[in-house]
Amino acid sequence: MKDQTKVIAALLIGAAAGAALGLLLAPEKGETVRDGIADYINDLIESAKGKAQSTTDELKQFGNNAFDRARSKFGNVTSNVPESADNAVDAAKTQANNVKNEAQHHYNGSKNKVKAAANGIQ
Image (cartoon, rainbow, N blue to C red; front, side):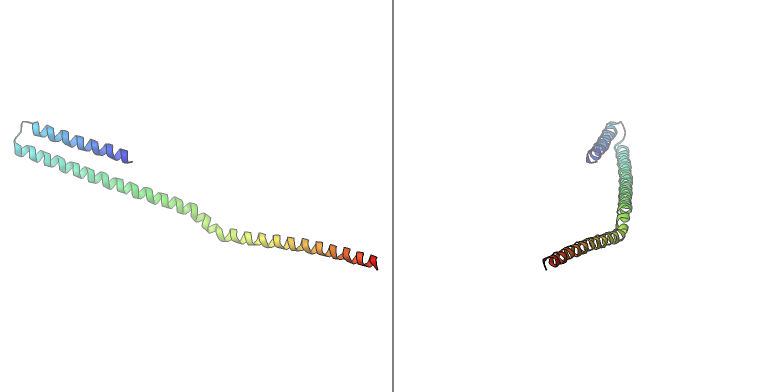
């Protein structure tokens, strides 16, 4: 965008310089030439103000659109966080219970084997 701005500025400066030279070399009275140059420069200034305002409005709109897109994209993520956390906690509890039950099963099996072995020794 900086290169584009430089090109536009160069074109405006070139146009202004060309118009000023044309007016200075024209066979008119000095006062008429000065008035013409002043009018032309005022028109250029107004045009530049309009373009600057238009560009500012476009940039503001672009920023607002980008913000809205980001908010909608990440807003859905943040609204799902509590549900995902609850699901993760539930899954962890279920897994812990499964491990506990399996450990209890192995403990009971080992206990029974030790009792059987102890009874066989007696």
